[in-house]
Every structure is written in C-alpha cells, then in structure tokens.
Length: 288
Image (cartoon, rainbow, N blue to C red; front, side, top):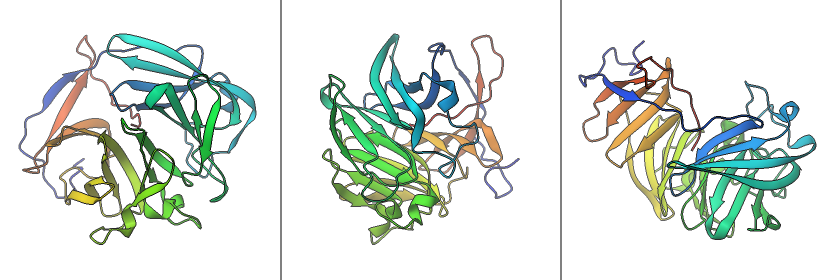
C-alpha cells in the first residue's frame, strides 16, 4: 500500500537496519516505553498484571486510579548499562514517566478530572512527593528536556475537551509546571486536532507531528520555528530526527514498517528491519 496517498513511492532505495535486543522484560508489566533527555530508554512498569490497561486502551478507557495501591518501577537503559528504579507505591494509574534533573522523577496520569486535578507528580530523590500539578487531560505524549521543562501533546479528547491546557494541542511547561507555550494560540499555526507523535530534541526544542493538518513542526517556547507540510509518508505515530532526516514508523497502512525521510527534498525510502540473524521484523511502537 502506498502511504504517500499520491500514487507513487520516492526513488530512495530500500535500506536495511539490524535491530538487536537491549533487555529482557520479566516479572513486571510494561506500561510505557519512552526516553529521557539524555537518550536513555525508559520503561515504566507496574507489579500488578490485573491493573494493566487493556491492549486496545485509549484515553476514554483509562481509569484514573488502580484497584489498589501498587509499586511502580522504571527500567532505564543507557548503552550497555541497565538500572532499576523503585518509584514507590501509588494508587494513581500513571501512564507516563520522565527523568528530571537532580535525581528526581516525574510520573503523570493520562486522564484528569478537570483543571483542579493535579495529574503530574514530581518525586524527590528519596521517593517522597515534591509537588503535584495539572498537565491537562487526555495526554498523548509527555517528555522533559534536560532542564526539566515539559512538553505535552494531547489526544483529540483533550483538545476538544472542556478545560485547558489540552485545548492548545501542544503545551510547553516550565519546570515549575507553569504553562509557557500553547501551540494552537500561535498566529501561524494550523491547529492541532490530535498529537500523533512528539519528540523533544534538546533544551527548548520540540518536534510534533499532528492530525488533521498532517504537519511536522519544530517549536520552542518562543514560537513555531519551522514546519513541513505534505510529507511523502503520512499518518506516522512515532519518529526520531537529527534535524535533517526523519526515521518514522506507523504510517497509514504501513503500521509495521519504518521509513527514512529527507526533509530538504521530501524523498522517502523504506527501511527493512531485521534481527541479527537476518530475519525480518515488524516494527513495534514505543512513545518518546
């Protein structure tokens, strides 16, 4: 199937990528796969299988509390080093995790009952609660930069819901939790209906790909810095970038495939992902 929707594929040749396992998950249920500001892989894990959301969960299906308190853990993988972090016992159904400066952690709950519901929790290095604040309802993606500032993209339920800040589509928060940027308020924005993918690439630099404009944008808290429309691969739900190229996955009709896009030329080529033995793999999607 042609994910461009234009009846053609770009002339870039198919390239091969070998994917090697980085860790084995056992004993706790994974809730979220993401990354921190230093590029380490973070896996949020819960000890209780009965409290894991169903496989087809979306923001509508997600309860805000677990059936009983459970312990949350984070597996952090940086190069060849793997570490386990005990984030304590909570009865909130956290869906996102980020590492913050100074040995602190952020846990966030994807759903909120309203603007007075503090669904983000900052944990001090000793595991105690440092503060709580509201980060919006129906969070699709949440990432922190190296300074501890947050970026959050929202599902359509948050964008079209009754309370801010999710109505902005993409929000930049200062480390204190104060709102510092609202995408849909920008004068040159094509409004976000739903965040498809978010990537915080550096201090005060976030990239977002969103529905229904299918626009890729690079932003800072000062405003929209650049944008790209009409990309040759459409509807992707995960991406990485070096500023000139995109590695994307989850395009419409190509959910198990990866593509490499050149932003300057609009060219796109499929990546054939294999295991170390040369067997083809279908790309799974993590968030972050």
